Amino acid sequence: MSLPKYELKEGVSLIGIQLPMRLIIKRTARIYEGHGKVLVITAGTEKPDDHGAGSYHPFGYAIDIRVNYFRDGGESVYKELQAYYESKSVTVIFHKGHHIHIHFNA
Image (cartoon, rainbow, N blue to C red):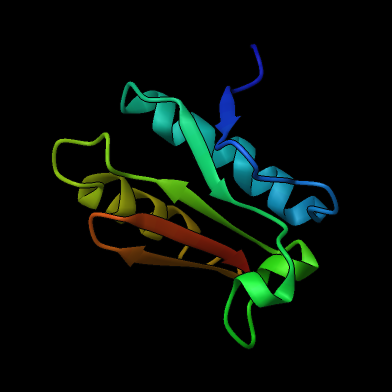
């Protein structure tokens, strides 16, 4: 079985991404493949100034992912992600029509 594919939006870094998030990226990419799409990560490990107070991004425990290429704006993939991660110390937040935020509750 091949590794799931994902892409990074230009300028996005995953340097310093934590191990739980690497596993989340792999599983999320597989879910996207099931919907016929390649996972695009639009935010990774950014500086604290790039996200609000309390953000998990600077610590390597969060990603944002693209949804605008889904016909339903990402709602179906959001529901699938939410159901999969519900009991796994992972929070999935849907910013309708914009992106899905996923973070590991470290």
